[in-house]
Image (tube, rainbow, N blue to C red):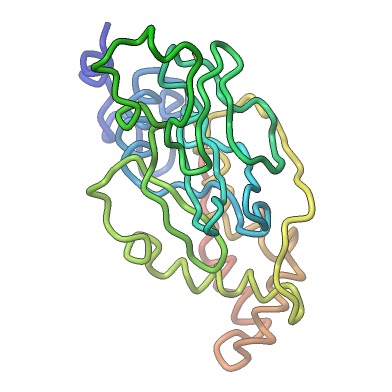
Length: 251
Ligand code: FES
Ligand SMILES: [Fe+2]
């Protein structure tokens, strides 16, 4: 069954979302998941890394856009590239090291060598590929890449709106987050990774669940009160947070 056929089987929103509850297929329907990967993760900007994670020329980090593994790398000129981590020969994983520094990438299967910008530079036994083989057509597939406040984003969609338009009012919250360094630039010093057997939307729903903010994110909210005292007194922030409490149940 092709993805297009499966998309025909995707449940409609009014079959899933009701005023007082959301039905379980919202989280476990595989055709819906496939459609989300195609329509959201292949079409919009996805955050892949912070600039501090690839500080030097040749620094790279592995990341993910939807189901596609990508390499985020800073080339010799300092330019950032995001490329699919699949060799253009027979699709082996080109880079298997999670993070580091390199002068180039070499596929471990048959040895094709790629420059930091993804272009194919060298391959063993080039004469065996025939005269019409064009190295320029076999660089790593690249995603459109842009950054805001050190946050590096990438998209598969060349027609996607500009990153700033996509982020819209979210830039305010990114700016706020970047001020958490008390005057020092924010740097990624490590990471916590959690593997949780849940649908990806659950984590996003947690982000818009204001009920837990005053409990779990007390210090973050305090910094907001400090920056914008006139609009955000303690009581009004708490009132706004509690007024948005929503109950989501699945049936
Ligand atoms: S799959 Fe990478 S060189 Fe063959
Ligand atoms: Fe939270």
